[in-house]
Amino acid sequence: MAEQAFGNLVPQIRPWRDWLSNRGFSFELTYKGEGMANVGGGLSKGMDYVHDLRVSMLFDLGRLVGLNGWYLHGIIMNREGRQVGWDHVGERNVLLTEVWSIHGPAAARLADLYVEKSFLHNRININVGRIALTHTYATSVLLCTFMTQCSAPMAIREPAGWSVYPKTSWGGTVRFRPTRDLTLRTGIYKIGPKAQDNTGWAWGSESTTGIQTPVEVTWEPFFGPRKLPGHYKLGYGHDTSPYPDLIGTVPAAYAAIIHAHKEKPRDTFYVEADQMVYRKHGEYQMAGGYLLAGYIHNTPSISNFADEFYFGASLLGLIPHRPFDRFGVMYSYYQMSPRLTYGQSLRQSAGLALGPYITGPQTHSAILEAYYGIPVTPGLVMTPEFEYVMRPGETSVIPNAMLVGLKVIANL
Image (cartoon, rainbow, N blue to C red; front, side, top):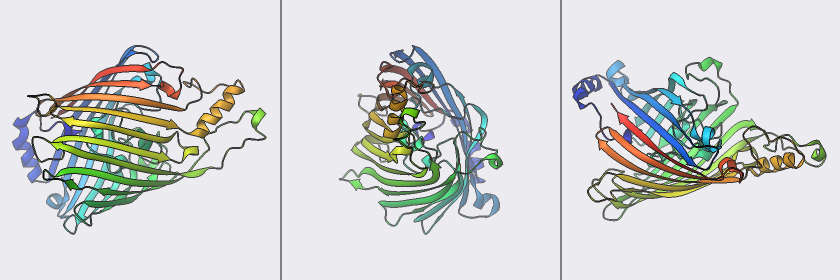
């Protein structure tokens, strides 16, 4: 989040921050607030607000306790608010705002807490501790300029095997960088139900269902005389947890001929790419316009989202005299598990209830999102948002919904 706001709202405390940093402690205090209103279609007109207030801390263990090259990362956060998709749109699978948590509000939740060290001139890096996988895999600052894709695409962060901020898992990653342009990441993480432990502090109460072993290869070339960067990712994750067949309860009339599959582990494959197509106002990674796209596939019979694909653009400085404003637009498509759809169709034909909030056999949905990010002052970005939700609830029963809102990011 802090990377999008560029600077701090209170520069007067910079000497104090530098004094702390020179002694081994750095921090960022960041507020992100999102207000989204459904203005047409869906279930009802109305608005919800959510916020994320977090403190990101970095401890230089070399300066503090003599462990040179080791760093301790920590995040404590507060989240409050409600999800507009649930209350007013009828969409409970795809999150329509970035800031939301299945755990509900937490006054002071512990998120990431891990140690990190680099070796061989940064060619090898390790991190170990409590980590949200989607802070490391299948993510980018560019994706997080969009509400529906941060901190990773929905088909990545929905399954239990991919812990997503603020949910963290015990584990670690090793990153190899054999060349300037090529990076390999792999790790191992403990997996448990996402709805456990609302505070992040009650480690002893967490259960374990399996392990996740992600692997990601990233190619980061630079093209042309202006050195336009690209990021091309190929990833895979294997979650050993046993997951049931999503066909669910088979009506008695079909029980003799239709059987649920045995429980099995989940595999996830993904391809993500973004490429800068022009450069403006600097040499840093975000100084220009990007095209981006991605595709995610999960084991279909046991994953709510069997497939997702998205494509879009994030473009800097389109309006004269507004060189640092950023415009983004993205289309994303979500394909539900065919076994989930099949089971719901069987129960519907037998006259049985499909469950709360389900209006029919769920097949697919899509979202068109657009934003315009305005850096108001160093440390403050205001972003008007627009979303058009097609087939809310993954059926054709609820009318397509149109949402407008505002996202605010502020760094102390």
